[in-house]
Length: 333
Image (cartoon, rainbow, N blue to C red; front, side, top):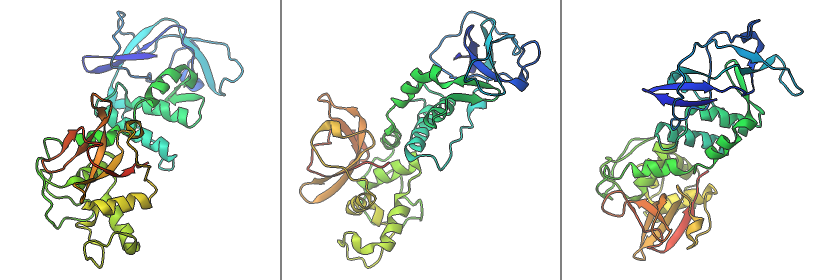
């Protein structure tokens, strides 16, 4: 099936010769589909065919069963192409289990963001298709209709090619023009989820806000909890005798320690290809000031990734990845 958009509504085209299955209980004796129709693969870049709308009970041709066809499902094809409108809202409830493999869960959270942010030509229904593939299923089911996964391998490959780290980059980039100042002053903030006023902050606040916005990762809470149990493992540079949730997570050395303790550290190099969108890097400015940045998905004319950071003039996206001595390279799962 192919789909597209017209006047804000999604529509679906079922071509002749497209073999799929319908649950037997949804087909009457004459081969008509019963109940509401369902569709797949919403693609906003396609154009609507010249044919007009047809009723939703368009006649299907029942095909002979072959080895491997699922029990209680009937192989069918449409006798003629047809088109029907369908609201986008019926595809918005995408579910994926909390117990899924971490990489699968990351892909889905990323695609959900890119879809809602209209960054890529994808739709929430793609998540269901991709989930079926990543779970090793041979068929993709939606309502009363089921499609062979193999027929959608090109679309699956397209989805898997989307960089899965750009959700963090976009969240950091949204701070540009909003966070316009730099203020290193100590402030009491809420816990968890505490923040200083959005219009200002320090370099660590770019990372804290981006991870919280894009992935619901609260570094304030995570660092504080880890420091409570492992205070002596963290840098002892500020004369503190106990963790302070107002400031600990806003200090670069503490974030470096936390990332390393969690296994997120990668080798430091001057090879631009080693740095992926969403990676976090730390540097030393002027030989004494630790600084932290997020690697962008945009590159300089020389092919070096840009970095999003706040070094004094608010959040900026600049060609500074190798401008200062690198002291750390981290990639969160």
